Length: 305
Image 1 (cartoon, rainbow, N blue to C red):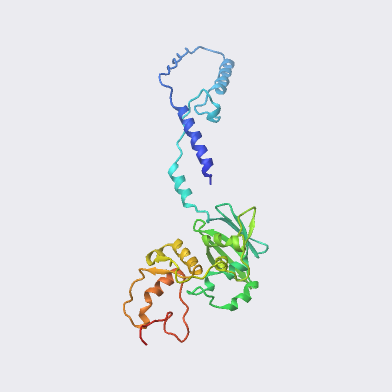
Image 2: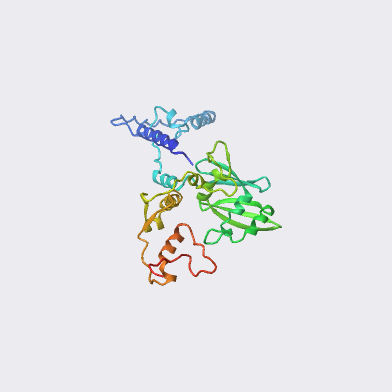
Protein backbone atom coordinates (compact mmCIF):
# COMPACT_ATOMS: atom_id res chain seq x y z
CA UNK A 1 0.00 0.00 0.00
CA UNK A 2 1.25 3.45 -0.93
CA UNK A 3 2.38 5.40 2.12
CA UNK A 4 0.67 8.66 2.91
CA UNK A 5 3.72 10.80 2.17
CA UNK A 6 4.25 9.13 -1.19
CA UNK A 7 0.59 9.49 -2.02
CA UNK A 8 0.73 13.23 -1.18
CA UNK A 9 3.66 13.72 -3.55
CA UNK A 10 1.82 11.80 -6.26
CA UNK A 11 -1.25 13.99 -5.81
CA UNK A 12 0.84 17.15 -6.03
CA UNK A 13 2.55 15.88 -9.20
CA UNK A 14 -0.77 14.96 -10.80
CA UNK A 15 -2.27 18.36 -10.06
CA UNK A 16 0.71 20.17 -11.58
CA UNK A 17 0.54 17.99 -14.69
CA UNK A 18 -3.20 18.50 -15.02
CA UNK A 19 -2.72 22.26 -14.95
CA UNK A 20 -0.21 21.91 -17.77
CA UNK A 21 -2.66 19.81 -19.70
CA UNK A 22 -5.30 22.57 -19.77
CA UNK A 23 -5.74 23.97 -23.27
CA UNK A 24 -3.99 27.27 -23.99
CA UNK A 25 -6.49 30.13 -24.03
CA UNK A 26 -6.54 32.05 -27.30
CA UNK A 27 -4.22 29.64 -29.03
CA UNK A 28 -4.22 30.05 -32.79
CA UNK A 29 -5.58 27.11 -34.72
CA UNK A 30 -3.20 25.35 -37.02
CA UNK A 31 -4.03 25.76 -40.71
CA UNK A 32 -5.58 22.67 -42.15
CA UNK A 33 -3.30 21.31 -44.85
CA UNK A 34 -4.92 21.14 -48.28
CA UNK A 35 -5.12 17.74 -49.85
CA UNK A 36 -2.60 17.15 -52.57
CA UNK A 37 -3.97 16.06 -55.86
CA UNK A 38 -3.30 12.47 -56.65
CA UNK A 39 -0.79 11.90 -59.38
CA UNK A 40 0.13 8.84 -61.27
CA UNK A 41 3.36 7.30 -59.95
CA UNK A 42 5.32 4.16 -60.58
CA UNK A 43 4.78 1.07 -58.38
CA UNK A 44 8.22 1.59 -56.80
CA UNK A 45 7.40 5.20 -55.89
CA UNK A 46 4.06 4.19 -54.37
CA UNK A 47 5.77 1.49 -52.26
CA UNK A 48 8.36 3.98 -51.03
CA UNK A 49 5.67 6.54 -50.16
CA UNK A 50 3.74 3.86 -48.25
CA UNK A 51 6.73 2.97 -46.05
CA UNK A 52 7.52 6.64 -45.38
CA UNK A 53 3.96 7.35 -44.26
CA UNK A 54 3.86 4.24 -42.07
CA UNK A 55 6.97 5.26 -40.13
CA UNK A 56 6.33 9.01 -39.84
CA UNK A 57 2.74 9.19 -38.53
CA UNK A 58 2.59 10.84 -35.11
CA UNK A 59 0.71 8.69 -32.58
CA UNK A 60 -2.41 10.19 -31.03
CA UNK A 61 -1.19 9.38 -27.48
CA UNK A 62 2.31 10.13 -26.16
CA UNK A 63 4.58 7.17 -25.52
CA UNK A 64 6.78 9.10 -23.06
CA UNK A 65 6.04 10.38 -19.55
CA UNK A 66 4.16 13.72 -19.70
CA UNK A 67 6.95 15.43 -17.75
CA UNK A 68 9.30 14.82 -20.72
CA UNK A 69 6.94 16.25 -23.34
CA UNK A 70 7.38 19.95 -22.63
CA UNK A 71 5.50 21.16 -25.71
CA UNK A 72 2.53 18.82 -25.47
CA UNK A 73 -0.66 19.21 -23.47
CA UNK A 74 -1.94 15.81 -22.36
CA UNK A 75 -4.97 15.55 -20.03
CA UNK A 76 -4.48 13.14 -17.14
CA UNK A 77 -7.12 11.11 -15.35
CA UNK A 78 -7.94 12.19 -11.80
CA UNK A 79 -6.97 10.05 -8.84
CA UNK A 80 -9.85 8.43 -6.93
CA UNK A 81 -9.07 10.05 -3.60
CA UNK A 82 -11.92 8.81 -1.42
CA UNK A 83 -11.54 5.04 -1.98
CA UNK A 84 -7.84 5.25 -1.15
CA UNK A 85 -8.56 7.32 1.95
CA UNK A 86 -11.19 4.88 3.12
CA UNK A 87 -8.87 1.94 2.57
CA UNK A 88 -6.03 3.63 4.46
CA UNK A 89 -8.31 4.53 7.34
CA UNK A 90 -9.53 0.95 7.67
CA UNK A 91 -6.01 -0.39 8.21
CA UNK A 92 -4.88 -0.19 11.85
CA UNK A 93 -1.27 -0.47 13.16
CA UNK A 94 -2.07 -3.79 14.83
CA UNK A 95 -3.41 -5.48 11.69
CA UNK A 96 -1.43 -8.48 10.49
CA UNK A 97 0.27 -8.15 7.12
CA UNK A 98 1.84 -11.62 6.97
CA UNK A 99 2.80 -14.50 9.22
CA UNK A 100 4.63 -17.77 8.74
CA UNK A 101 5.82 -20.77 10.79
CA UNK A 102 9.59 -21.35 10.98
CA UNK A 103 11.94 -23.94 12.49
CA UNK A 104 9.56 -26.81 11.76
CA UNK A 105 6.65 -25.03 13.40
CA UNK A 106 8.39 -24.29 16.68
CA UNK A 107 8.21 -20.52 16.13
CA UNK A 108 5.99 -18.14 14.19
CA UNK A 109 7.03 -14.81 12.63
CA UNK A 110 4.41 -12.06 12.86
CA UNK A 111 4.51 -8.88 10.77
CA UNK A 112 2.07 -6.04 11.46
CA UNK A 113 0.96 -3.10 9.36
CA UNK A 114 3.10 -0.70 11.44
CA UNK A 115 6.14 -2.62 10.02
CA UNK A 116 6.97 -4.23 13.37
CA UNK A 117 8.03 -7.91 13.23
CA UNK A 118 8.30 -10.45 16.05
CA UNK A 119 9.16 -14.09 16.47
CA UNK A 120 7.00 -15.92 19.01
CA UNK A 121 7.02 -19.53 20.17
CA UNK A 122 4.37 -21.86 18.82
CA UNK A 123 4.09 -23.38 22.30
CA UNK A 124 3.19 -19.94 23.69
CA UNK A 125 0.42 -19.60 21.12
CA UNK A 126 -0.94 -23.03 22.00
CA UNK A 127 -0.70 -22.27 25.73
CA UNK A 128 -2.51 -18.94 25.17
CA UNK A 129 -5.35 -20.45 23.15
CA UNK A 130 -8.73 -18.84 23.98
CA UNK A 131 -10.16 -22.35 24.31
CA UNK A 132 -7.91 -23.04 27.34
CA UNK A 133 -9.79 -20.68 29.64
CA UNK A 134 -13.25 -20.38 31.05
CA UNK A 135 -15.51 -17.37 31.49
CA UNK A 136 -13.51 -16.34 34.57
CA UNK A 137 -10.26 -16.29 32.50
CA UNK A 138 -8.86 -19.20 34.54
CA UNK A 139 -7.52 -22.33 32.86
CA UNK A 140 -10.03 -25.11 32.42
CA UNK A 141 -7.28 -27.73 32.81
CA UNK A 142 -3.69 -27.41 34.01
CA UNK A 143 -2.81 -30.76 32.46
CA UNK A 144 -2.67 -29.16 28.99
CA UNK A 145 0.66 -27.54 29.90
CA UNK A 146 2.42 -30.92 29.83
CA UNK A 147 1.20 -31.56 26.28
CA UNK A 148 2.60 -28.37 24.73
CA UNK A 149 5.80 -30.06 23.54
CA UNK A 150 3.73 -32.46 21.42
CA UNK A 151 2.34 -29.65 19.23
CA UNK A 152 3.87 -27.84 16.26
CA UNK A 153 2.42 -25.08 14.09
CA UNK A 154 1.44 -26.50 10.72
CA UNK A 155 0.20 -23.25 9.13
CA UNK A 156 -0.77 -19.67 9.96
CA UNK A 157 -2.60 -17.05 7.92
CA UNK A 158 -4.13 -13.60 8.47
CA UNK A 159 -7.93 -13.53 8.26
CA UNK A 160 -10.59 -10.86 8.40
CA UNK A 161 -8.46 -8.31 6.52
CA UNK A 162 -5.63 -8.76 9.03
CA UNK A 163 -7.79 -8.40 12.14
CA UNK A 164 -7.29 -12.03 13.15
CA UNK A 165 -4.85 -14.91 12.68
CA UNK A 166 -5.82 -18.52 12.03
CA UNK A 167 -3.36 -21.04 13.49
CA UNK A 168 -3.44 -24.75 12.64
CA UNK A 169 -1.52 -27.08 14.99
CA UNK A 170 -0.44 -30.65 14.36
CA UNK A 171 0.03 -33.38 16.98
CA UNK A 172 0.17 -37.15 16.49
CA UNK A 173 -1.08 -36.80 12.93
CA UNK A 174 -4.13 -34.77 13.93
CA UNK A 175 -4.78 -31.09 13.32
CA UNK A 176 -6.93 -28.47 14.99
CA UNK A 177 -7.13 -24.70 14.73
CA UNK A 178 -7.32 -21.59 16.91
CA UNK A 179 -8.17 -17.98 16.06
CA UNK A 180 -6.26 -15.10 17.69
CA UNK A 181 -7.10 -11.40 17.63
CA UNK A 182 -4.40 -9.36 15.89
CA UNK A 183 -4.80 -6.55 18.42
CA UNK A 184 -4.05 -9.01 21.23
CA UNK A 185 -0.99 -10.41 19.42
CA UNK A 186 0.31 -6.90 18.71
CA UNK A 187 -0.04 -5.95 22.40
CA UNK A 188 1.77 -9.02 23.75
CA UNK A 189 4.44 -9.54 21.06
CA UNK A 190 6.88 -6.93 22.50
CA UNK A 191 6.71 -8.69 25.88
CA UNK A 192 6.88 -12.37 24.92
CA UNK A 193 8.40 -12.33 21.41
CA UNK A 194 11.79 -11.67 19.86
CA UNK A 195 11.89 -8.29 18.13
CA UNK A 196 13.16 -8.46 14.55
CA UNK A 197 14.81 -5.72 12.48
CA UNK A 198 14.68 -3.01 15.12
CA UNK A 199 11.03 -3.48 16.11
CA UNK A 200 10.07 -1.95 19.47
CA UNK A 201 10.46 -4.22 22.48
CA UNK A 202 9.31 -4.03 26.08
CA UNK A 203 11.77 -2.49 28.55
CA UNK A 204 11.20 -5.41 30.91
CA UNK A 205 9.99 -8.54 29.11
CA UNK A 206 7.71 -10.85 31.04
CA UNK A 207 9.31 -13.88 32.63
CA UNK A 208 7.57 -16.90 34.06
CA UNK A 209 4.11 -15.99 35.29
CA UNK A 210 4.72 -12.24 35.48
CA UNK A 211 1.97 -9.67 35.14
CA UNK A 212 1.82 -6.68 32.80
CA UNK A 213 0.78 -4.67 35.88
CA UNK A 214 3.78 -5.91 37.86
CA UNK A 215 5.79 -2.69 37.60
CA UNK A 216 2.75 -0.71 38.76
CA UNK A 217 2.28 -3.08 41.68
CA UNK A 218 5.89 -2.73 42.85
CA UNK A 219 5.74 1.05 43.18
CA UNK A 220 2.23 1.39 44.60
CA UNK A 221 1.69 3.23 47.86
CA UNK A 222 -0.93 2.44 50.53
CA UNK A 223 -3.96 4.70 50.73
CA UNK A 224 -4.97 6.40 53.94
CA UNK A 225 -8.11 8.06 55.29
CA UNK A 226 -7.42 11.23 53.32
CA UNK A 227 -7.27 9.43 49.96
CA UNK A 228 -9.05 11.08 47.05
CA UNK A 229 -11.04 8.14 45.78
CA UNK A 230 -11.08 7.78 41.97
CA UNK A 231 -14.60 7.60 40.51
CA UNK A 232 -15.90 5.73 37.48
CA UNK A 233 -19.25 5.62 35.75
CA UNK A 234 -20.73 2.13 35.35
CA UNK A 235 -22.08 2.73 31.82
CA UNK A 236 -18.73 4.10 30.62
CA UNK A 237 -16.87 1.17 32.17
CA UNK A 238 -19.13 -1.32 30.41
CA UNK A 239 -18.57 0.25 26.98
CA UNK A 240 -15.09 1.83 26.94
CA UNK A 241 -11.93 -0.29 26.79
CA UNK A 242 -9.81 2.72 27.75
CA UNK A 243 -11.90 3.25 30.87
CA UNK A 244 -11.56 -0.44 31.75
CA UNK A 245 -7.76 -0.26 31.46
CA UNK A 246 -7.69 2.85 33.66
CA UNK A 247 -9.93 1.09 36.20
CA UNK A 248 -7.70 -2.00 36.36
CA UNK A 249 -4.60 0.16 36.87
CA UNK A 250 -6.43 2.10 39.56
CA UNK A 251 -7.25 -1.13 41.39
CA UNK A 252 -3.49 -1.78 41.61
CA UNK A 253 -2.52 1.73 42.65
CA UNK A 254 -3.98 3.16 44.84
CA UNK A 255 -6.16 0.02 45.11
CA UNK A 256 -9.53 1.66 45.71
CA UNK A 257 -12.23 3.11 43.45
CA UNK A 258 -15.88 4.18 43.52
CA UNK A 259 -18.22 3.10 40.72
CA UNK A 260 -21.44 5.10 40.34
CA UNK A 261 -24.58 4.25 38.38
CA UNK A 262 -24.33 0.48 38.88
CA UNK A 263 -28.09 0.19 39.24
CA UNK A 264 -30.42 -1.42 41.72
CA UNK A 265 -31.25 -5.13 41.99
CA UNK A 266 -34.69 -6.47 41.20
CA UNK A 267 -34.95 -7.96 44.70
CA UNK A 268 -32.95 -7.75 47.92
CA UNK A 269 -32.60 -11.47 48.59
CA UNK A 270 -29.04 -12.77 48.76
CA UNK A 271 -29.12 -14.36 45.28
CA UNK A 272 -30.26 -11.08 43.65
CA UNK A 273 -28.70 -8.32 45.75
CA UNK A 274 -25.34 -8.28 44.01
CA UNK A 275 -26.51 -9.06 40.46
CA UNK A 276 -25.96 -5.53 39.00
CA UNK A 277 -22.39 -5.52 40.33
CA UNK A 278 -21.78 -9.07 39.08
CA UNK A 279 -23.00 -8.18 35.57
CA UNK A 280 -20.75 -5.11 35.43
CA UNK A 281 -17.68 -7.00 36.62
CA UNK A 282 -18.33 -9.68 34.03
CA UNK A 283 -18.11 -7.05 31.26
CA UNK A 284 -14.80 -5.71 32.62
CA UNK A 285 -12.76 -8.70 33.82
CA UNK A 286 -14.97 -11.75 33.29
CA UNK A 287 -16.79 -14.12 35.58
CA UNK A 288 -16.18 -13.85 39.32
CA UNK A 289 -14.81 -16.90 41.12
CA UNK A 290 -17.32 -18.71 43.25
CA UNK A 291 -16.51 -20.81 46.32
CA UNK A 292 -17.89 -24.35 46.02
CA UNK A 293 -20.01 -24.06 49.18
CA UNK A 294 -21.38 -20.57 48.46
CA UNK A 295 -24.51 -19.81 46.49
CA UNK A 296 -23.23 -16.52 45.03
CA UNK A 297 -19.99 -15.00 43.78
CA UNK A 298 -20.31 -12.10 46.22
CA UNK A 299 -20.95 -11.46 49.89
CA UNK A 300 -23.73 -9.48 51.52
CA UNK A 301 -23.22 -6.97 54.36
CA UNK A 302 -26.15 -6.15 56.59
CA UNK A 303 -26.64 -3.63 59.37
CA UNK A 304 -28.00 -6.31 61.67
CA UNK A 305 -27.26 -10.00 61.97
